Image (cartoon, rainbow, N blue to C red; front, side, top):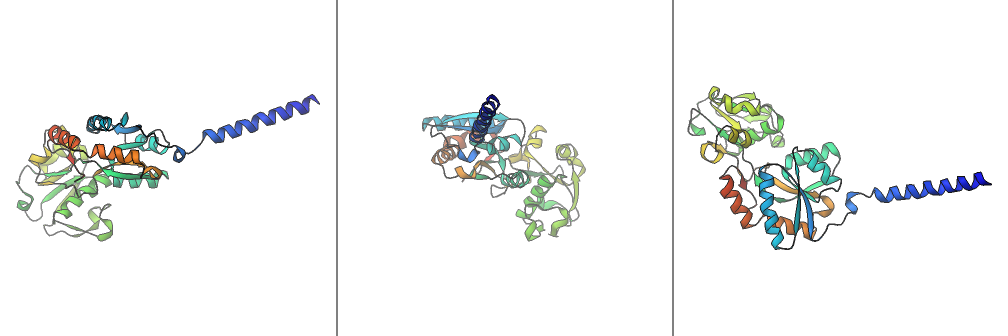
Length: 274
């Protein structure tokens, strides 16, 4: 009789534990957003600096922003998908699309923020039109940044990319190349040091700034805010129309934040919501 009672007790405990576990494993979609506070993930550096100003603006509208700062590009999306963040701000849409595909997540962009414009530079020529036929062009050898460099050239009419390859293009997807540019793929971080060895090259903003190159003043071509590589505020899909998220986006896309970006970064980072 005692064994039956013990067995019944154990069954009850196990059942209770299972139910509790089910309750604890509620998905991020079941989490309602706090109307007065959002937890937002950013990467260290400029994104963090800008978000500190957004915090000030949002506070005036009764919204508290708690920042969580990350040192890589994967964890902010992982934390958002798992419900540890309410939003993040650091990535462009092509990166987001690839992340969702690779990780089975459903994160969505809700508002443009800034563009860290990739520029084209030359030690030999003052404009891209001056480049001779057959000029050498250095571009990053990683797929994302290589495509981005080609996008800039197409946007300015110097090459034409196959229609279905606009955001994933490689040098093998170029249909028209009137200047017969000779593309040399290089490590993105090393291109500033190799600029004198080619006629022109595309350089990411962070590597340009580290080399003392100012994108706004020194580039012969500069990525526009029409670029698909503009950064976004990103949230879980079920929160995209949430009033608190809309208040947050409004705070980011304010004149005060725009003024800070323009004065602090002087064209190396560009407000992109206009």
